[in-house]
Amino acid sequence: MGRHNAFTFPYTFFRERASTVIPELREAGFTGINLALNYHASRDFLLRQGPALEYLADGFHYYRPNHSKYPLEAITPHESDALPDNRMLDEVLEAATAENFEINAWAVFMHNSAIGMAHPDSVVTNVLGNKFLSELCPANPAVAQYALGMTRDLASRGINGIRAESLHFHGARHGEHHERFFIELSAITEFLFALCFCTYCKKNYEGQNSDLAPLVAKVSSLLLTVFEGKDPWLGKKLDKQALAEIVGEPILKYLASREQAVVNLYKKIAEVTRKAEITLNFVDQSPLLDMSSEDAISNSWQVGIDNSQISQIITRYEPLIYRGQSDQVASLASNYLSNVASEITAILRPTYPDCTSSHNLLQKVDALVGLGVQEIDFYLLDTMRKSDLENIKNALKN
View 1 (cartoon, rainbow, N blue to C red):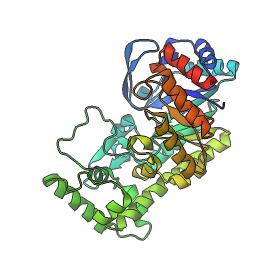
View 2: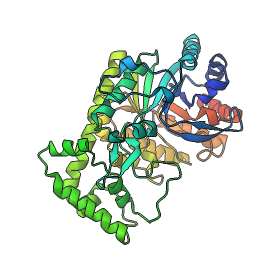
View 3: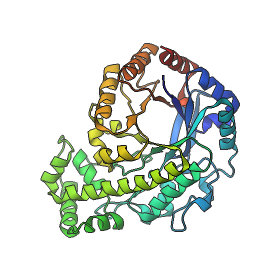
View 4: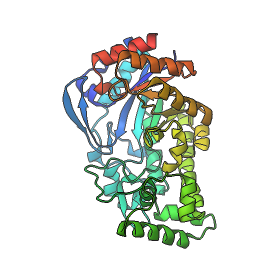
């Protein structure tokens, strides 16, 4: 078997010594961890050290940022959004070195309300001028420099790699606290509502000698019509063809321009990781956009990802293969293997709601190995009971 990492929040290492946790994980078959060093807000029911409810602050850095790694024009983390020292990370790295254990930085890039509220000019702004304060815009130069600064900072700390989450655009419903819509909206309307028309996204489109005004007028008119009446696209599939039919062909060129903005940012970040000789994996959440789809990668354009280009830039694709049955896992993984240029690392949830038994997990691991997927990561250590670790150990030994 290949490498197997456990995604983990800092909770575990705030409560337990790394010198105890890491040997336990090695015994279970793990070869490393993907440690959340920058993360979004969450409230989690933890079982490893619980049962307990714990909270993560939005956009928090679980180390003391080195501001010298950030360009002068970059947005930088505020001191109140970071730990005052590096003790937790240093202890984990020391224990990992002693055990020859891999430590990767799990970093959330564009989903960050702390920065969004402090710098509202940096966030996704829709065609009506509404700001999504939890979503930074990848096309914004100051945001891009923030992402590069964080990458340089993390790469300098002795880690083995970066697991990049949220390094792209997002949809209208990305989990804002008590998020509410009091009108039934189609997937098409939600997509257009969350589509960024900030200064920089518009400049990128106009830079292709494209006339922006008709597109802005069309999207605005469509949204306002829906909000005043009933959504005519309820039940209609969201895809590029449908958008071209409804909005017109210019929307396709606009989508291509935002995909290129994301590609350009990945290229710059990959240059940093290559120089540092560490890996860069893309944590792909596309399978969550449609839990019934076996062709999840075809939905990645919705968040501005051009998988054909991105998979040539990064080290590995790392999709969330969150499905209940082994045949669904195999189908989804096969789809990725057929459509990306890089190798893949599959992420499984060995707990509820995906796995109902040790046999269920064993079947999924066997299905992935049968396809040639040698790297399987597991989410999330902090929520796992001892029996869950035992199930992973048995599945990896088989």
